[in-house]
Length: 123
Image 1: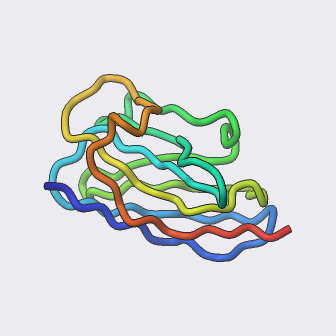
Image 2: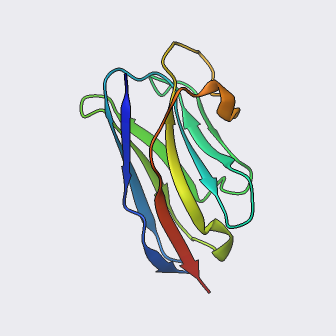
């Protein structure tokens, strides 16, 4: 079994930068970040394949966010720049337990989830 622990969420102002981390135990393949804004459903933010050969971003964060992974440390990062109030929400790290060559945006295809870290962006 894989365990995921997110960290780094906090209150920031619009235009600020913030980096989230996801520390994993056990073997992981594809990894993704999702977020859930107040009153909304959980939505895909960014995903990365096991060897970082495939990376995909939601249109709402493209050009502002960067996902990366350090397999030696078993950590996935989400660098968030030029943050907007619309980025507010609980950010979840997710992992797949089997190989896939492409990133998936479908939350049903992820097997493990962290508890989430809160991010609030004030205007």
